[in-house]
Length: 484
Ligand SMILES: [Zn+2]
Image 1: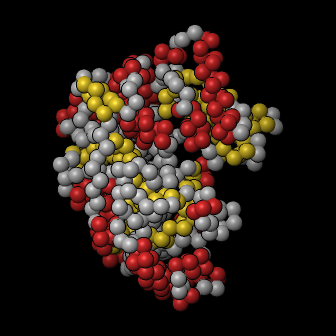
Image 2: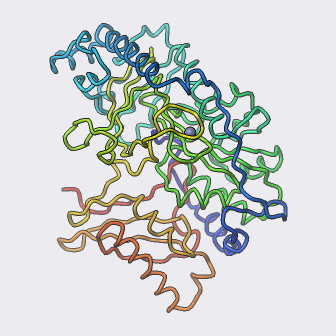
Image 3: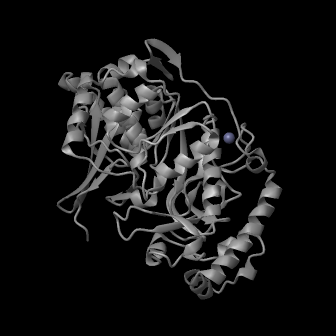
């Protein structure tokens, strides 16, 4: 999902973070048992929810029927794009392709890509395929890195979105008995409101808290007995620290955590499950094609099922633009919306790198599973000619005991050479430990990172709470190198 949940920090939050860190020592002791967490003074095991399916007719459709439906919808949406959106028609004409050339699903590869810059150039309404009078909601990306991209939804688009969110929530284990705290930003950002309507459709009770005011988030969790938390994984981690620091753990009833909006690792999942006492699932989406709801994990926690009746997914080689097969080891996810009326999006380059899993999922859904996003191609750092992704570093450092999931990667240039330093927070007990122990942890992390990325990077252990906390998307990478 496109960022916009408010990536900001200020001195106040940093101070809170530091306070959390000082008492953070208890975290490792309380959560010593793998997969368990202490709630109300009792040790409970993280509960795997029952497998439920919101819409079996669509989610478990046999593949041949699903693919026939996809083709029918692809042909229709390409025709609409050609007839109603001048931008698409110009691109298709330039590529020498017409709607009648789409005779099979593989013919999607004939169609030109759409990029974020293309959508920006259509600001605000040029990409709309329906008159504004049929549009009932408008969302937009944050615009922090350039012109905002705008998405318009018709009433039917909103119904589809709620349906997809209800599927996502049910897949994650939510039922109508749950009390759901949404700590994603509300507003132009699709995270908050997108989840909101899905929770209502499922019939659970939604607490529309929005992002920020972390102490209040904890108080609401306690007062209302929230059983589900929805936010970014980095903010979930921050709330876990705050719960620990304020001694609130016995009063927290969370059982599920639905985390999206950022690429995150399985090591982070374990930290979240221990820290919040939840069963944690990933979900994926981006405002340019819908918002959250494009794909979601089921209770198997192994890959996110794509809603293929509404999206046509492809993997491409980001360098050549050619379609790759799943067996080739993954690529950049490209999405075509199959049913969207307000803004049809043809072959959108997400910049997100992932793989597709082969084989059937035990849950019974037939939608293809995509892996967690291993990286955003936009996040890639090239350090001394080596491609480095933040997730590789996260995975490596979380494999070392005593390390917290709070880190920051700083790229700089010393003379002519690129330099990469990773600031890593360690548990307080370690931070104040003797130098030799610190040194050995630092070296262990450096070795793991070197194995993962093939490059020696300097690791600096820092005090708990000293890297910035975010209430939206975490800022993991700071690139101080001069732009050439
Ligand atoms: Zn499944």
